Amino acid sequence: MPAFVTFGRILFAVLFIYTGATKLFAIQETADFIAGKLVVPDVVAPYAKQVEAATAMTTPQLLAIAVGGLEVVAGLMIALNFGARFFAMLMVIYIAVSTILFNDFWNQTAPENAKVVVDALKNLAIIGALFMIMGYGRATRSAETAYGDV
Image (tube, rainbow, N blue to C red; front, side, top):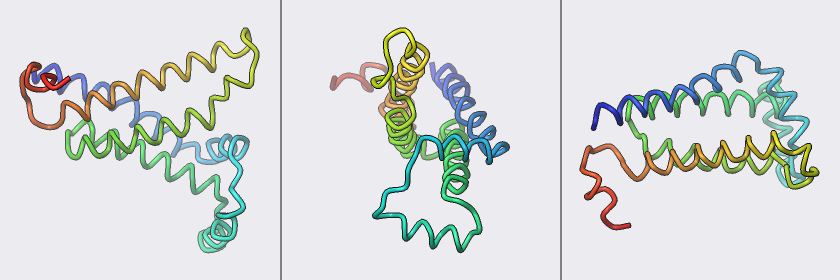
């Protein structure tokens, strides 16, 4: 059983490593997508301007680098089972927030929103798998021990 869990964890982590790498290799395209969907709140705007001035990059570009880096690092840590619970929780938060911000299927009519609804449901399934990683943890144990308190 532990070999299957390890193999499954590695295959699952490939999703994050790949998508994070594609975001990092296409930073401008990712930044353009973020800029089209996200508006910096007025409360944070002065600080964002300071960071933009210090880095000579726009906020969407900085977010693209941060998100791509988070996905690659979290994917590697989950695959290597090093801090997997912590990185799984970070990815749950990230995926939940990005699903709400970028998959606005509730503002579209039924036939046109099918692809976006499926994408949101895929994200929900990924969140479920991340919760399983968080629940299973690092140590190998029997299913009765791991899930006996449910």
